[in-house]
Picture 1 (cartoon, helix red, strand yellow):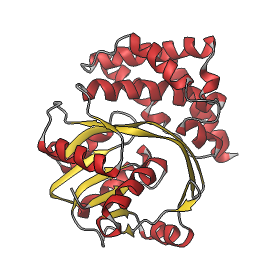
Picture 2 (cartoon, rainbow, N blue to C red; picture 1 turned 45 degrees about the vertical axis):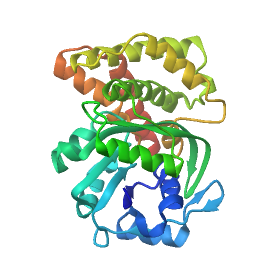
Picture 3 (cartoon, one colour; picture 1 turned 180 degrees about the vertical axis):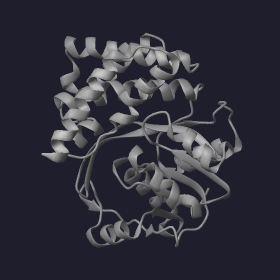
Picture 4 (tube, helix red, strand yellow; picture 1 turned 90 degrees about the vertical axis):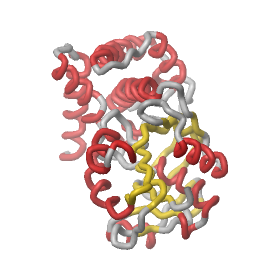
Length: 303
């Protein structure tokens, strides 16, 4: 895989885009953007840990079919990303979506074909994103796999690419289990932190753990209806991991709320509520938290 297109130049896309740029060079790696973003990025630049990123930006009219398309946008930009990337998806293109939640792969498969889409997410990345400046304290890793967990030729090709680019990765035995566990973690701690403006260290208290367990139980119930069993041990494990990330870092949803940006509430608690309604499962905790997030977003965006 030599020609890579990335969509989304936030903390996730910029970090992994830089690694790929350093390996393959500007001629083989581009960030797909609209005209306005291209002008802004080329004029103002994007700074990663204090250094200006050397990225190449291209519009859909300039893009060519890529071997690998990596999506790293927020969920509310996915529809726009799908429109932009149509010229980048050719007969042999593989699509890797690092979006939060559990819905993007299905939408991409319906648009471009299941055979083009891998299941994936980024985890462990700790960063602060302010304006055009991104600061990293932990780079995290990409978790990816085929829907059926097969070790296919393209899985091996991406493993080789990531190893050469110094991108940490994991190909798990069960990608669906890991995807749903990340969804459970995100739904829990992104939501809580966006309401109380918590750092990771702030989560280390009994009241947060009790609330986390209530949220996780609802995720477990809808996941089971979707055919994925999330063991109780993951709840305690996730809590320990999140609390260990330190007093400086905050979740992306907390940062969005503090900056007055729209959050991904719809794809966290909102998805749990939607699946609960689909399967006749009660989700009162997620319903209450989702309404609180909506109220707070409304105040910030319209205040």
